[in-house]
Image (cartoon, rainbow, N blue to C red; front, top):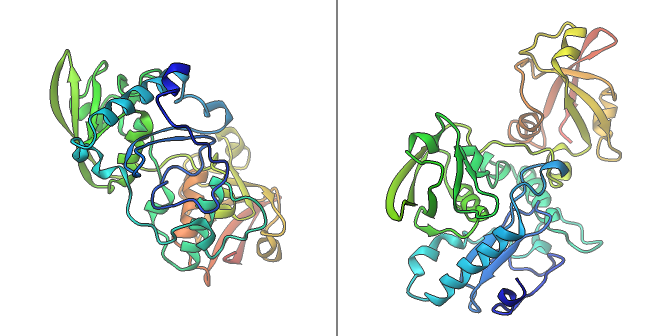
Length: 337
């Protein structure tokens, strides 16, 4: 690894103040990530993937796969600039705010962490009534379309989920995923980048190396395939929940409270001051079980609950929680907070 590193000019950035958000677009909730760049700003690829909370924080990264990504980045660098077509989509669209300091909700009182960028983008877009599902469901994992990639390779398919989009496209374990939508891949983060940039309903062109031969596959996507766990993301606190901690009840806990298994049941685990002031003023208490939102009792995940709060309710609106407290149900109309 040391000899490999000598072929790069390594630069470490530890905060986001003044960073070009047009160039450095990545999953801002990551603990660590890497960009492989030409000196002129052309992007060869990204590295760094996180799947969930602490137990799943390193399931998609390894020293071996980082080394592979570095070697592939060097291959792209040696082929520069003739390989411009496979790099064309690696830079995202120009952002609304060129640097983090321009985001109106961001209060500069200390160094700006990566997650501060995303949480303030979410909050600002919600306040401006511009928030969309694409803003919330970001950087889907390869598993979201049925791909489990080899940890130490990043390009090689380890397994395929039956009946998934990847399976229906004819992908197989052992396939080497070389390009996706024309972009040359160097890591799982590059797969995420393509998925992140793609619309919900789309077809992705995949170039696969199988038994030494290149073949083309088409992955058809539709439905809620971008949805994933938001609860591990630091940005979901200020960006979505904003003072409200709520966790789903287990089936046994539902039975104890005579709540059907397919019905909503989210226990209010914590009300964080001062952001939860409106919630407390409306009568919500820690320990309450939310069994309906605006009359809807359908069971949803905590992530779907957090997303719907901001997508379905404008800043000047309200939401009605039906809560179960001491065996009795009560409707609480809460101004959006």
